Length: 202
Image (tube, rainbow, N blue to C red):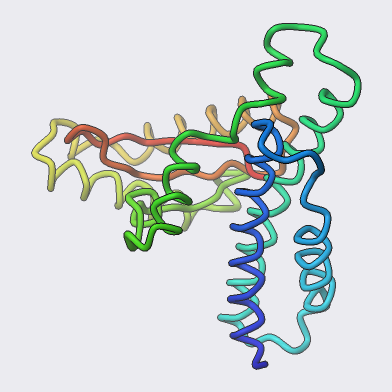
């Protein structure tokens, strides 16, 4: 099996693991998906040194691992709540709910062979500090303005400086609230309107 094939297997295994965990937390399985998780961790460890990977392969590997790390942090939190018992209503909800409704729908659509989801088509980038990640913030701003122009929305001529200040404030807030290393931003279309979405990225 080639490196590209193994990376594709890792990506598919992470996607499968998320679905299996959703089933488990939803009460559809008695045990966590240990076999699938072992397979994912083995592949993650295999390529962790990065020596065998080209630049493009390393970028893909890092993207997969970042997604897995974010999922895994949420799974461990849910497992802890499930094992210790639900002490608050919001704990019970966290313990049995899926990660995000749109992610579940995207996974379901992929499994059903419906092709690339809306979320997958969205422009995505990560930021931990707007000065260090200036190029990413610039690309995010350009994508946001292009989407607004395409949708015929006002604000397509907004100031980059004000946008940059907003992203820095939002990034600092999410990093503080969730204890994450970075924040993932995406420009998406919802009901014909452009939306800038942000979520914690471990």
